Image (cartoon, rainbow, N blue to C red; front, side, top):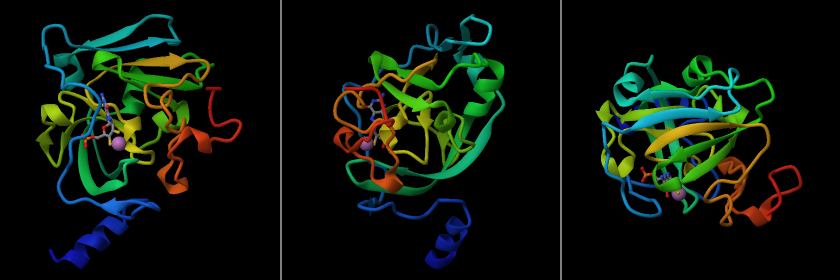
Amino acid sequence: MGQSENEQARAQEPGAGELPPGQRLQRGWPVLHYGPVPRFKPLTWEFQVFGATASGDKHSWNHEGFMTLPRTTVTADLHCVTRFSMLGSRWGGVSTATVLELAPPAPDVTHVMVWAEYGFSSNLRLADFADPSSLFATHRNDEPLTVEHGFPVRMVVPHLYAWKGPKWVRGVEYMTADRRGFWEERGYHNIGDPWAEQRYSYQEVPGDGPEL
Ligand SMILES: Nc1nc2c(c(=O)[nH]1)N[C@H]1C(S)=C(S)[C@@H](COP(=O)(O)O)O[C@H]1N2
Ligand SMILES: [Mo]
C-alpha cells in the first residue's frame, strides 16, 4: 500500500492520523518515562480497582485473570507533551468499558486515578477514562508490549497527552472528587487535551483542576 493510501485509511479513523498543534511526527517509537523500568513479577502482580466502587469492595485480577478478560482493538495516535507524536498504532487490550462493567463505580464517582508501579499515577475525568478509545493495552501492532513500553499493561488515552497513559499499570482508584496525579502535580495540565495544547498547569482556567 502506498503512502497516500495509508494516509487515507488513517483519515477514516475519527480524530486519528492528524498532528495536533505544535507536534511533530516521530519515526519509530521512543521510550520515555520517569524512573527505572520495573521488573514484572507474575506471582504477585495484581490489577486492582478500589476506592469508590459501587459495592464498596475492591476488585482484583491476577495476570492470568486479566489476560482472559474480553479484548478490544483500537487504532489510535500517541501525542507526547515533549512534542513528538506517533500515528496509527493498533492497540490491543482491555477496554475501560469492560473494567467499568465488571467493577462498577459508585454513582457519585467523577474522576479516576490510574496507578502504576513505583507510585506513578495520573488522574482522569471519568468521561475521559470511559471514552470508547481508552484502553488498558497489552499489545501494539499485534505484538506484546516490551517491558520499556509498559509490559504487561499500560493505559492508552488517545485523545489526551501521553503522560495520561501510565505504563506498568497496577490499578484504578475511583474518586468522588478530582486529585492531581504525578505529572499533574509537577507543572503539567490537569486535563491535557493536545488539540487545545493544554500542556502546562499555568494554562489552566478555573474548573480545569484542583488548586495547586
Ligand atoms: N509509569 C509511567 N508511565 C508513563 C510515564 C512515566 O513516567 N511513568 N511517562 C508518560 C509519558 S510522558 C509518555 S510520552 C509515554 C511514553 O510512552 P512510551 O515510552 O511507550 O513511548 O508514557 C507515559 N507513561
Ligand atoms: Mo510524554
